[in-house]
Length: 232
Image (cartoon, rainbow, N blue to C red):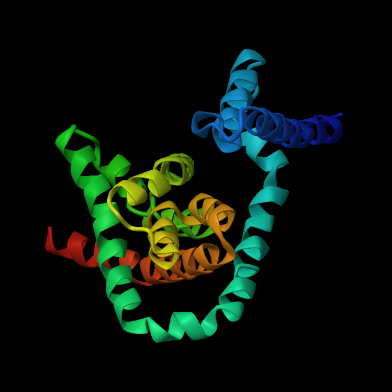
């Protein structure tokens, strides 16, 4: 019986996503109906209505967490196709990466601190701009709340994917390489999916930013927090 219930929860995730995708396409890609938004809201409502424990739902959907890893690795394919263009811009891209990797979590933590967030909440916000599998690994390493980190990561990605391209256009950033790299740094996997909607070139640069931001954050953040803990 437990196996059937777990299978039902897995099917719920698939059905909710495809329902959200159908609504998104019918609404001609209306931003607020992005399938990640609508499906998450639908699942949350159903779990709450039927009093289903979230931990049980999460365990039933472990296969999707596992698939995030291979999906992230597969982003190396468009990188290989655009390697020459990427290599020509190595220096400015690395400088942008360093600035973005530091500025994105710093802004979030600073705002949360000003609004009176607790230390554990602040800690859980620090990996917000890296893709989910890396963010969850970092959260476990630094003792943050994995559930909160995952929620913030998804929220960051969705907002970035919805508002990012329009904001960049308003700011006069029309180069698809810059658009993609910016989306990858700030909106990770969801932003990268949006970048591929723009063009393969935009998606390739977003994939590069997603991967490098994740690696850099995973290497630096735990060490930095440990160093700060010793000082304070």
